[in-house]
Length: 214
Image 1 (tube, rainbow, N blue to C red):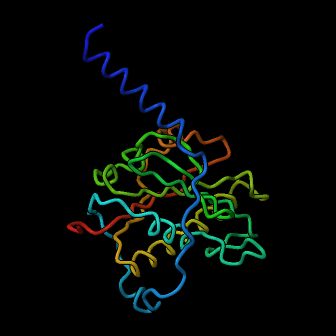
Image 2: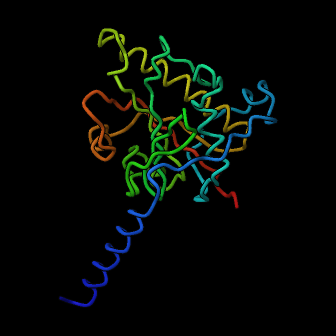
């Protein structure tokens, strides 16, 4: 066996061992729910951006973002910052970063590991998605929705819109750049996320610091 090949195999073994040691569930810092930009100013500042700094979001910033998107704001009932039809809570937030893919668990305010692969390039067809620090993927679990297929897709799209607007407003308040996206190879991304037959990808959302941020 040639020396470079042995090195490549060793690197894969080391990466696999590191992946195995990573916790299956990562508890996020509590969200910072005080302060921020006043709502009317956030609405005025809300916009789409398609250029991002490669700088990663720190854990606290990511925790705030995910809680604003669809976190639990009423612990006694488990209800969230974004509404869903009949309180089905059918939208899951997958979080794709350079370190891999995790899914947000609102009840625990935590991230559950899905994959150690960097699949950001699969979250859309635009070039910038491959380097945006965070790509959220909104996945609807139709199995949680007790209604007709037509209404399942209608409400899944509507409920995703509520979450996406929360993300936009949080980003405006926090000085982050973001853009929601619908151009996705859904079959390829669903395979990478290991989705089941009842799960459908609705939209994706790129988030990060504005281009040029240090």
